[in-house]
Image 1 (cartoon, each protein chain N blue to C red):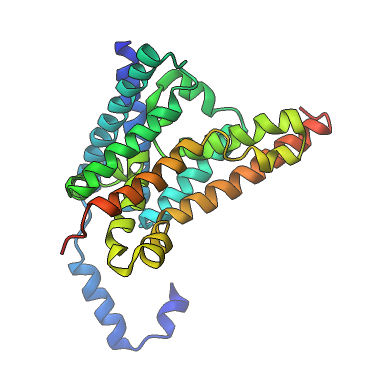
Image 2: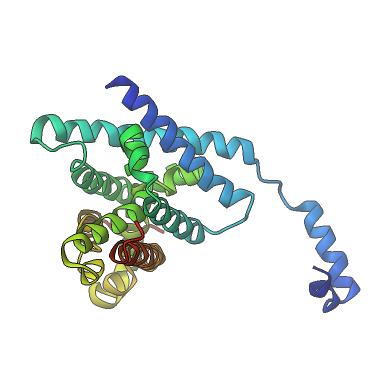
Amino acid sequence: MLPMFFWAFVIGGLICVFGQILFDVFKLTPGHTLSLLVVLGAVLDGIGLYEPLADFAGAGATIPITSFGNSLVHGALQEADQHGLVGVLTGMFEVTSSGISAAIIFGFIGALIFKPKG
Amino acid sequence: MSKKNSNKTPEQQQYEQLEQKHELQRPVLKNCIRAFWVGGLICAVGQAITYFYIYFFNFTEQTAGNPTVATMIFLSMLLTGFGVYDRLGQFGGAGSAVPVTGFGNAVISAAIEHRTEGFVLGVGGNMFKLAGAVILFGVFSAFVVALIKTLLGIWGVI
């Protein structure tokens, strides 16, 4: 259990350092950086590299935004296995639904509770 | 670069040189170290929540990711609402933006910021102002990747 925390910390931290380098060295905006990382996660899952990383680093791989791209591909491929090409569309949000739903629901609740500052 | 410069008057070029001289050098190494441990810490918290769901709610290692992400976004709602996440973002840079809490922060802060414009046009219309790009490129790239992989599977290449 303890090594899992260690690797989650290290791998998660390294992915964030990669993001920081895109910010600082390549002067990308946060929007560009996050989009790039998501695309990277999708491609990495496509060539089968993301799952071993997630097994190895746990939350270090599932918490960074790269996992969003990864789970989109995952859901699409799962459905595609059962229903063929249509599954790519129907399964897309299968795995990611919790993240998007949580963001929408908590975003709205947040807007109801909190007042903007300044 | 030379093509860019040719459109500018000598004064403009001089000013650009002056600007470059005075531009603050970004402390890349310091930022990276900060991003490393802030991002690492957020992921370690995520790991703790994952174990919590595995031990108390009978999720497996594979399925525990979903409730973990939802919980992290809930936490980022609280932190954003109380203004803590902004400060964390100034300190941690990409360390706070890259984890899924940063995605939650982008959605939630946009929702809170635009609530004065009303709930339908303000909150509803602006909620995904920043996070929309992430969803768009995530979905489109996932579509392309999954399409290629499925077609290769159908044709018997893999």
